[in-house]
Image 1: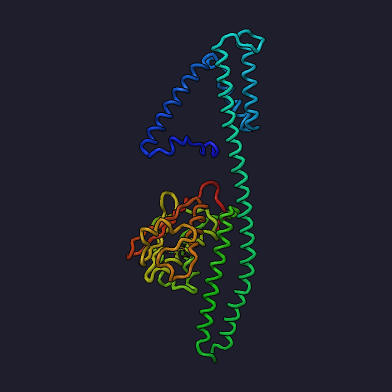
Image 2 (image 1 turned 30 degrees about the vertical axis):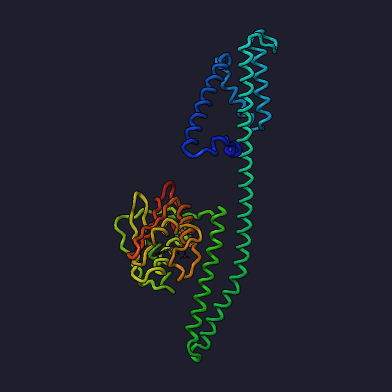
Length: 367
Ligand code: ADP
């Protein structure tokens, strides 16, 4: 169809917009009139019960074997029709002029239908070839990134380890050494997190991630994430509201779901100076997690884009980041058939929500 979509009538497309619409309407009316004329001419054929199935056969032949074979089907059908069904029977000659015209119309229409079927076939083949090509590119990118990040992460961990060892060995005698070692370690960890994000994005986009699902208690997971973040982040600013109502279990990949909550809580602590309140509650049979902060909020022009790849809002430049955390979170939540969205009022704060469907079908093992 792509090929057909590129066909335009220049005298229509170059006309100014209101005239163009009028010309299109006139063209549609002409096509309808022509259609009626054709149908009238085809009457001797139309009344035969095999007429429409024959067009189905042409389409099938063209889609599965190519336009050429669709045309062959048309011609064979026209010949069979003349030979078996039209006077004089048992001969390809057609005595009645009206019937002769009908067969010619039929042959032309059938060839056109075969062409459409052939175009569908080649469009499908093109799409498949492009899909395969893209898959290969994604796989190569994933492999390259994997190898590259592996090679970068090893010396990084040596740097962090050496800084820690030096701080432990000489921290007491060299002033400020422990603090500087912390700065090194924190920066190494930030770079390490960015590298992990890049690898994760490549894996998610190549579609080669399979979720290892288990039954997850989301409230317990959120408390656990808070504990984990208390090493290195001001997690005392995090307050987890007690859960109101009975929470259904969620069928999720614990490692990946945890990743989403780590991203949201880290962002809230990173972009806001005040209290961050996390709520977990049952919602429409599933679970809703909301992370509310009292930070600067997100402008209306940025809000629709923050879940896009590499998007960073104006004002985020002061903080380290690649703009991948929310993109990864969205891909992960969607892989769980859930939904993630943000609400924000500039100057007052933001709320990030994650809604997850409850477990359906046979229960998975408990995480
Ligand atoms: P990063 O933090 O690496 O920039 P994210 O994808 O995690 O990437 O976030 C995208 C953008 O969304 C951030 O750059 C920031 O502008 C905005 N953002 C995310 N969370 C918050 C928040 N809690 N408050 C204000 N802005 C936020």
